[in-house]
Each structure stands twice: as C-alpha cells, then as structure tokens.
Image 1: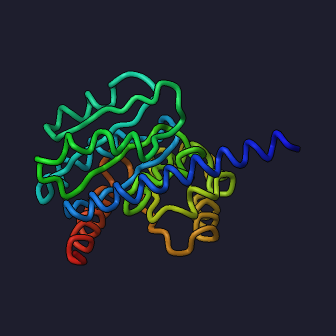
Image 2: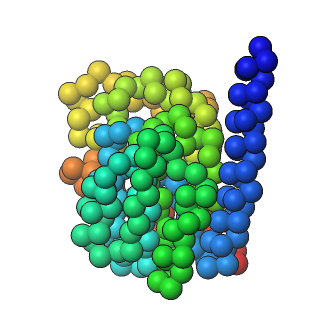
Image 3: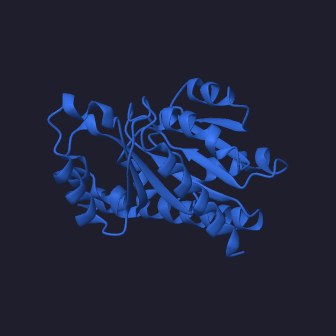
Length: 225
C-alpha cells in the first residue's frame, strides 16, 4: 500500500510540474497569436497522412508549423518537410508521450516564422498523451475505423478531453465489421460536444470539411486576442 501511495504522489508531482510548464507554453502561443493543437491517435491511425493531405489546403490561408513526436527516427518529420513547412522532430527515446517541457524546448525554432497554426503530432498512443497538457488549445483524436468500434468506450479519457475526432479510413468500412452507429453513439455518450469528422485520407473524402473547421478555429482564436 505504501508503494502505491508513493507512485501516486510521484505521478501527481509529475503532472503538476507538466501543467505549470503547459501554462507557460499557452502564454507563449497567446502572445504569438498561434493556435496550437495536439493530435493524438494509435500507431497506424493515419495522423501523419492526415497532415500530409490537409497541409496543402491549410497553407492557402495559414502559416503552419508542425512538431512531430515519436519514440525513435525522423520518418514522420521527413514526410512533413516535403511540404516546405517548418517542422521539428522530438524523439522521446522510449517515452510513450510528449510532455510540455519537450515542446517548450523547441518553440524558439518557430519564433521568427510567423506561425499562426502549430500542429503537434503526439506519439502513437491513446492512453498516456491523454493526461499531459502541452499548452495546446485543444486535442484532436485520429481514429482509424479498422481499429474497431469499441475503442471510444475502452479509452474514454482521451475522448472526454478532445474537441474533435477524425474517423479515418472510411473507404474501408465495407471491408470491416465496424458498427459506425455504435462507435459514434459511444463517442457522443462520453463527450456530447465533440466534433466528428468522417474522412478517407486515401481518397480525399471529408477532408474539406475538416480543413474548413480547423481554419475557422484559427480565426476564432485570433479574434479573441
């Protein structure tokens, strides 16, 4: 019992320290009139592909920067760099999520670039990133429907904390036994206000609605300054 109590205290202190740094990050974003979003999803859900497909549309109206979080390698950052946007790779070296201090260290890399939308792609995971505030304005979940319609109910914390969920790989719906009604019902039962987008990154379906919404979120954020 004593060991469990110590573990809880360590975790509480870790989250408290993270939250304090997140508030500093948030002040930085507000000072620079930059909307920051935290994109979270399982490995293979299509997070990086979603960015690749939407960056060309976003860049028509926005100065976009990207932070890529991964355990090892720079593969995702290399893919994003092809779109000629400022991108920084953060490797956690085994950690299952980004934290606010990791993000803070790389923010000076964006300070002179006039970024008004910073997209932080977190490490592939639906559990650990849910508890760590990076200073973002909101979280976005990318969920591949082939993962199964039970995922929202199994991982409610991240769905409770997110503002939007992108249901990706809709073009594969007919090849799976996923029940979309059940999935969306579970999502709504956890978070009635969450915005749901159904997209196929492979075919391009639904990407316009997602991108328009994100552009409007930037405009709304900047209008409140």
